[in-house]
Image (cartoon, rainbow, N blue to C red):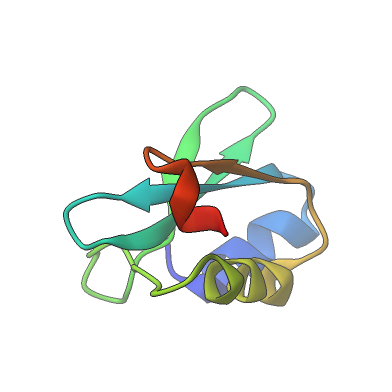
Length: 82
């Protein structure tokens, strides 16, 4: 889903949580939004490729552009969050 789709679904109360995942392939952070049923929807660009952010702070900033929702962070490398 692109950012505008995420905003719309969040405004409709379909999305309830954001999960930031450490992507070991790009060494960045990707974002998945969750709905009430636990389904996850990755944030993608217009071509359908998942977006990756350099820092956890950047990823959280993008989530705040969508809305004020709970954020969970999954990291394979805990030292990366510091």
